[in-house]
Length: 124
Image 1: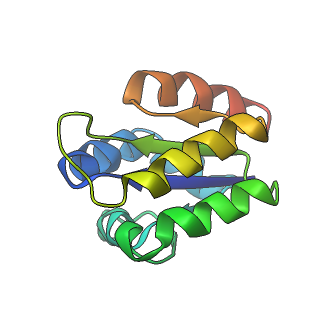
Image 2: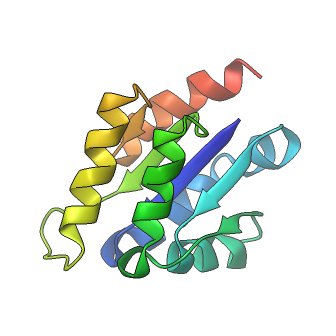
């Protein structure tokens, strides 16, 4: 199972906090985590193994979108900051659209991510 992780700057701490609640399950199961560069660095510092891609504005969102299009992901968790402007917003919209097109679960906040990840991990 492969899960992609993305968080806007104002949500990176939320992502690390969220993942820390699932640390044992994520490390002990057959889950591969992929993250955009900076988000991945924060996750890595918390002791959770993650494969880092490019930073979002440098193409990391697009790399994850490509994985979605190839159906290589089981889920995308993207903690977005709806109250801030983002120069790479077209990449964000493309990623979200592709998740819908290819029927890949997409969680954009901790509440939905918790429901989805509990269900996915329970199947392992």
